[in-house]
Amino acid sequence: MDAFFQPKSVTIIGASAKEGKIGYEILKNVSKRARVFPVNPARKEIDGIKCYRSVLDIKESIDLAIIAITPEGILKAMEECGKKGIKHVVVISSGFKESGNEEIEKEMVEVARKYGIRIIGPNCIGTFNGKNGFNTFFQRHMQLPDGGNVAILTQSGTFGIGLLEKLAQEDIGVSKFVSYGNKCDVNEVDLIEYLEKDDETEIIAIYAEDFSPQFFERRYKKPIIVLKGGRSEAGKKAARLHTGAMATNYDIFQGVCRQLGIITVDNFAELFSIIKIMSMQPMPKNGKVAIITNGAGPAVVAADLIDEKENLELAELIDLTGSATANDYLNALENVGDAGIISLIFVFHDAPLAATLQKFYEGFRRKNALYVAIAIGGKFVMEQKERLAELSIPMFDEPSILINALDKVVWFKNEGSGNR
Image (cartoon, rainbow, N blue to C red; front, side, top):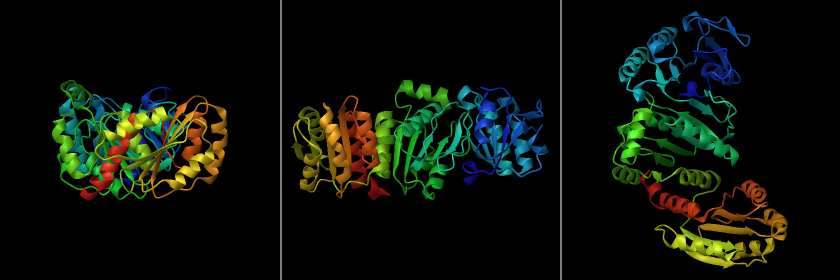
């Protein structure tokens, strides 16, 4: 699988000389991180890079092929990749099973298996390596995250792009990313097995519309967070149109995941929140929550939400009132008891608190707890969010999203991790 993430030589079958075309944008992205060999019978060169009529005309060995042509030419292209000795292929092209053209997809897989080729796709955007920046994307002007400890697996390229940009915006790093579309060959189990051996990956987040049977037949070594699409009848229909997926009964799916110690989430916000917490903070020692706040209203809402959760318990609520200073927060932290989670609520209603928080940042010392923050306010919020991120404290602006995420993190610590 390494060749999908750190190839030294890449051929692009369907490379284009026209800016904005899929084949051009892939070439532009890949050429920044690997030696590239574009295949386009109609061109002798693209942007000064020599073009080839076929991969068979390339003298050098090729680690990875990226295919961006219509399905009509896919069998010939795959056959030539096999004869060339290429063992890893990403098929970006759509128009296969998701469009009712299942037979051509099956034939493509048969050709690939004859030569021992592994395929990611079709109908996908491919791979991204956060450490070295290599990607097979055709999207322009994307904001990509730096290297980190979170791996993303997704059947939806659009969903994946949104999540990558959201992670980049919050300075949360990614180890590996795979958009695998119709998963005609390489599936989520193959990728998880690879990522479990990857030293850079600590957490695996998945968006999928269906799962391979093997997914439910093994135990997993690293935390897995799953957002499943296609849960309702309308969603199942949309999933079939998107990737040709056959969605399973969601209640059964959730129950099996729970037995396997897999975290399931209900929406994008919850998925992102759990990624944010688990990538920045250690696991909590228990589900007791201590709230330290300078605003009673948000703390009361948080307390109500905690009371509704199975895995959380409000241990302490320390209201420092609106006149709180940084020193008040520090003193409260020193006096917190055996809480496994410390929630810091800041209401930035005036400049003095934001200004004196510099002392908090300088004097902050971590207890054996998971720290999160809620900040409500205006112009100071983003600045303080960045400062808290420097302390690896994730900040949220909506108590309900945070509490839901914490409840599932604590469940994983208490029950889910025991099923690994």
